[in-house]
Amino acid sequence: MHEQTVAQLAQGLRDKSFTSVELTRAYLQRISELDQNYNAFITVNEENALNAARTADQRLASGEATPLTGIPVAHKDIFCTRGMLTSCGSKMLGNFVPPYDATVISRFNEAGAIILGKTNLDEFAMGSSNENSHYGPVKNPWDTSLVPGGSSGGSAAAVAAMLAPAATGTDTGGSIRQPAAFCGITGLKPTYGRVSRLGMIAYASSLDQGGPLARTAQDCALLLNTMAGHDPLDSTSAVNAVEDYTLSLNKNLQGLKIGLPREYFGEGLDSATGEQVRAALKELEAQGASLVDISLPNSDLTIPAYYIIAPAEASTNLSRFDGVRYGHRCADPENLHDLYTRTREEGFGDEVKRRILVGTYALSAGYYDAYYKKAQQARRLIKNDFMDAFERVDIIAGPTTPGPAFGLGAKSDDPIAMYLEDVYTLAVNLAGLPGMSVPAGFVDSKPVGLQLIGPHFGEAQLLNVAHRFQQATDWHTRLPQAGGVV
Ligand code: GLN
Image (tube, rainbow, N blue to C red; front, top):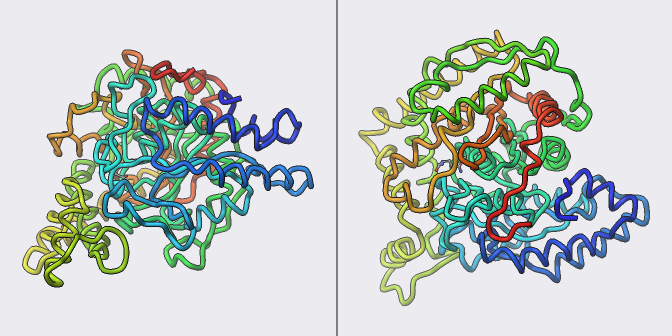
């Protein structure tokens, strides 16, 4: 059962090959037996999951089911879940049980999906390796000595190890696409505003976006159908009508123009990874797409701009964690100042503190123009590059990451090396565009991802291209072996 995709499981539920209770039990069983090897989950509530499965079975029997009714889904522990710990990977929220559901969670609940559990992540989604979690690192199911990527590493590992058929993640600078690439699964970061951010704990509000991680593009389409849509409670959520993303999956690629940014294939790209990505592009070419060389000339500005803007927004967003209203509070504060400083010192990990310091500095009077304003100007140039490119091509493609997954601990003492991991993913967030990572082969038995980038609200086309690619290749069907996964 666990090797099936969401689409296959949904069919199985309809055909009465198994019930949602049986399905949910099977995944809970796998989690309890295997997750000690990956550390993908922070919280699992078996009783609630099985109760929801029972309700789903009744709904399936009544004929009023949606495509996700009865399907277990794991959620990144950054989405607020009513009555269920939402830690954000931080000691600061180690006791936070939200009184409400994130809109994404409500939508899954309304669709009748089962909350299988909450997945591990880098603290407050800051990281590229899942080593910044208060709950310990997540291990890559392809090789447990490797990182799964971050920050949605728990979600990616859970799907890759088949502890969940699908999961949610968030992507501020690559946190859906990069772990999807490292774990050999498919991930989609939608257009900024396509998915509601209400109840998704904020890291960098102008960049954060929730999206699905699954084994196939078709499954991502099914999940996006449920996740996407206007939310009157999120003023940044887009009013554009939501398409049925499963309907456009089988269009042929004849005449599709795919732009290959020169800057994404240059220095810094591991050559074997580059070869896999080029081979994947050849496959799309064989299906009738044409490959067009393009340039995104301001790509060099991406890392510096992002690592000013994201920390600046983080420093303001995280100012709410002060020990007063909720979350961690230090013991016996002497006065208000002591309460703030000790609470934050104890509650936040090193990387979060580093970002708060950088962000606060960049926003301070006297430095604001030199750093924050400059970074915003660079952001506009980066966005304009994409807008110019989309005048000539339909989508843009390249590697998701400079190389495959690296070893646990290999970069954890070198923040700059870690930040360079995001070189191909950050610009998509700065420009608010949709982006995907699709399994595209292996380098030394480690998965690598093909990144597809579309114009704003071009999710249907990206999913279509990814789906066509997956019809012709079997990379996404390969199963990892490490940690007793099969
Ligand atoms: N690795 C990037 C960072 O640390 C992106 C993280 C994310 O997308 N949440 O900020």
